[in-house]
Amino acid sequence: MKNITVIGSGTMGNGIAHTFAQHGFNVSLVDINQQALDRAIQTITNNLDRQLKKETIDEAAKNATLAHIKTFIDLKTAAANADLVIEAATENREIKLNLFKQLSEICGDKAILASNTSSISITQIASVTKNQENVIGMHFMNPVPVMKLVEVIRGYATTDEVTNKIMELSVQLNKVPVEVNDYPGFVANRILMPMINEAIYTLYEGVAGVYEIDTVMKLGMAHPMGPLQLADFIGLDVCLAILNVLHSGFGNPKYAPCPLLVNMVTAGHLGIKSGSGFYKYTAGNKELMVADKFSK
Image 1 (cartoon, one colour):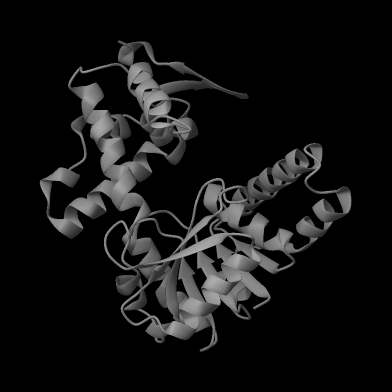
Image 2 (tube, helix red, strand yellow):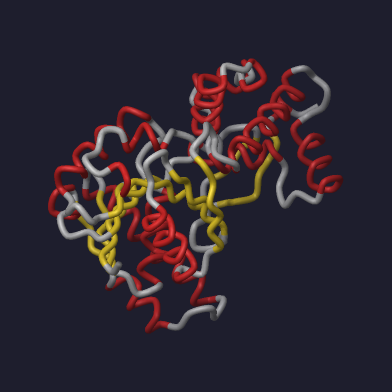
């Protein structure tokens, strides 16, 4: 596999494109408008500059990485010759089903269709395609160029051959692939999201403040960041969407999202992406301040 199409140029999509391009793959990056694509290329360039500053790459590697990425606003043109398509669009079931239905018509019969979904059923996504055996989950972690894990999710019809190819490909990207089966939340988010949700409930019920909750988990459990800060980093809207998938998929009230999370998303407080979540974020400054209304 040499020709990789990545659908979606947001945080995950541009990170996936960056990673493949840096390892010598030809990447077609697709989004609905050129402005989004231009922002993605600028983000990739900035991230490569950070690698350059840390001396993990040289100028030639930076230029080669950027040369391996081409941008498209037309899905058919971008995906027609793809060996592998990775969908990294919004975590919305209908959007993904529509994309995979289109891809099934556009791509060759041997093309592997992968989704970076963090919770939506691969079996359901595959059900709208002609070749369900070629559909798989390839769930990268954020930030993609840095994080080692790739959750490789087998749908009900995914073949051993396709699974092995994706496992091997992940190793080529210097990642550590872990094969899991297709159940709501897979492994990562089935475990992570209830923890984040419980941290939000702990705040909601007045047990402790944002700083205190995150400090307990960082210093007491050796987590690199607290669950509330992590929720901001992921995006509170994404956390809510995943919890809704878990709640719907298992029918268990333990997965019901905390009312505080629902209200924050409704009010547009989505974390880093909106500048305010459990913490406030200033433009150009990654240091965070606890929002007054949530501090103990």
